[in-house]
Amino acid sequence: MLSIIITWGVCAILTRVGYFSEDPMEMSYRARTDIRTNIIFSTPWFYFPYPGQFGKPLFNTTIFIGFLATVVSSIFESIGDYHAVAQLSLVPPPPKSAVNRGILIEGIGSVISGALGAGHATTSSTANLALIGITKVASRSCLVATGVISMGLSVIGKLGAVLSTMPDPALGGAMFVSFGIMVAIGCFSLRSVDMRSYRNMAVFGISLYVGLVIPDWLDRNPKGFDIGSETANQIVKGILGSPMFLGGFVSIILDNTVKGSEEERGMHSRRKTYVDFHNAKVTVTQSEVYDLPGVDKLAEKFSWIYRLPFIQNQR
Image (tube, rainbow, N blue to C red; front, side, top):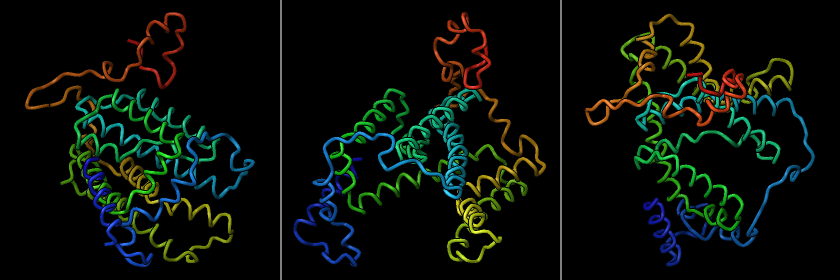
């Protein structure tokens, strides 16, 4: 954050002294801090979203399928994020109930976002994993406070408008760090997988290549795919044009159909209930980290509560 502020300040000084070009076609123009200041003046101080603000609801099959593929992709991403943040926080991997609870909350948030006209705007932020890795801060209280600040920024229009004027060098520098560490975390999550296995190398390589090549080919050849129906074409292109969905889908299919042992796939490591921290074994149980408080007392009146897939198992 400090580096972003410093970069922002340097860009502001260089803009003030006239160092950057005023020609929009020049590269240095994107570093100016005064090219989006009109957003600050045109944005109201407070803005409260409400259902129907963009008109009456409409339904489009192509858009629906596209959003559905996006939602499924974000579910894949979120499950990976849950396990990755557990590794960074030095706690056991989340149980099925905790994963189900996270997906449920994201689904409810997405329904609310859709009702307000924002589409699928609620999902876990993989970039935040990089922040946890950098700052070593994984406190729930800190993250809750961050969420409250984010909600405040979404309602107080002027503050959000100020952030939108961030020059490209400051934004790019932040992206280099956060996304670079994010990629490293993704590779680190495969540490328990035996990458010496040709089976795993094939699953990883094919999934990555398919996720990169096919969407790029569709983007370069928009008319190179035709199955006889314009609606069907748009639906299939929406699915095949999503790198995350396509790569994730192919990896799931291959990983669950190509023969391989649990040790080879890295599944055995998920049973461990301890972590190695500074060469000392620190025992942290899943119930201490993921169980919802007060469920046992509530179950005394409603015994069926343990049947809910997002509630921890009965102890």
